[in-house]
Length: 405
Image 1: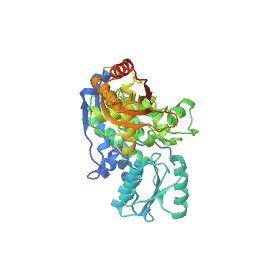
Image 2: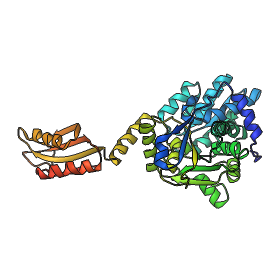
Image 3: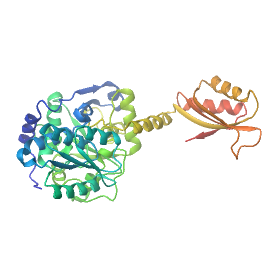
């Protein structure tokens, strides 16, 4: 792998290759999040890109430039988004593609990759283990390896996001970009800094997978022991060498956000902006919401890098978010086992203004005294104060209350 930096000219050439293939995604100003953060917030909606992520740009630019070199097809390793980009690009080029994905990759990403015509091999627990398996397949097959981030053509393709952003918002002051292996921020940083050096480029990593931050801190690329995070798209234990060099040149700051902050940001985007964004795509907003960057009053663009999130994860995030906001409550109590007791309990809850979602009545559990019954109830509530009022009302009517997590 050469360490020659990607140039602005290469990014401009990538845009020509991508013409008619990738979408020039919208830049959407958010009044809601501008008020919440004290910044002028703009979202670069790469979650609306074909294949659901910016990864199409780099994968297509690489494969389109290969020509006859790719006669035996291509091989790639991916946590999901690069997989779909490679599969789509290979299908357009009429060549076979084999993608190695971690065994825990979201089923939606696996199915989408297969739907684009690629062969999917599940191997390893994280991206880096899938990468090693993909390299072995490449050696045996003679196919071309399409790296997810540490490749000049891939980086140049991702850099077209920065070209579009700067054209759409020429007076932008700061850009927040997710970092996994570093391909996106390297391309975006180059595209913007080479034209407007004063724009701040800020990278955001998951706190559980800060591989690029550690590389910058120590001055060398090294592998983390683990990288387990809800932001699976940036769960990379070892960043690229080329991307590391470009990050040191073009990136002003790297911050981290934890999984709770990421999950809350996913929920906020869904509820307030009606945008479906995966964990990796939400880290930029999380950094702004939780004031990690010191950007108050500035005009800020956030790259929402992808929207390929498993609906089961969305369901969990929604439920946990509602609990955190005091809008969902599960509780357990015990009532006497005789006619009218359950009705009295329900009446108590109705009096407190809670809406019952579900209720389970059990009088045969071994730990429940004879002639009594255990009741578990899920409630829709307004806020934490409302929950306190419900518990207080129940206590006044003689019910013991155990709040369930």
